Length: 198
Image (cartoon, rainbow, N blue to C red; front, side, top):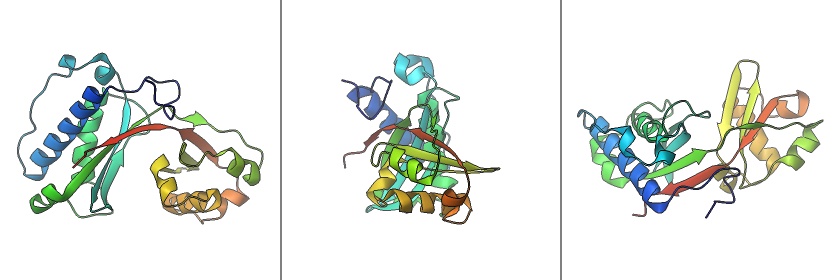
């Protein structure tokens, strides 16, 4: 059954989600331990996993963020995208030191599969706030060469649209209220989110 948050896309099956979570876990653990990655043939996966897809992989420990890396646009098969971003979230997130082997048992993996971002047209800051859909839309802001995004899951911590936009501007390296003063490029997307159960 299609996920209502993944507009225009068919949702993955439970088996496909489990396959991606397994690959994310195996790849992350091998990389953290300094071992060669397990080889796999992407052509052995279902068409949905072979199709180019954009994903974010989020790592948490006891609910606290431990790493999050992803892509906003699809450029490689989804199965490879998840593998690469699981490794990058563990080792390359500049906000955190690399994950240590002793942390692996505590890490919880969440995968977000993204729809293609769509430009949001708006006349002013009030209309921008009104057009955002909390808990549904992920948001990308662009201003000059700067760009930042929040996944839809971030609405859980920042439910007010004005605060959501201000914090996203800050993440982008701009003044928090620049979205009120300047016409930023705004894109929205939706995600299909799934995570490890234990």
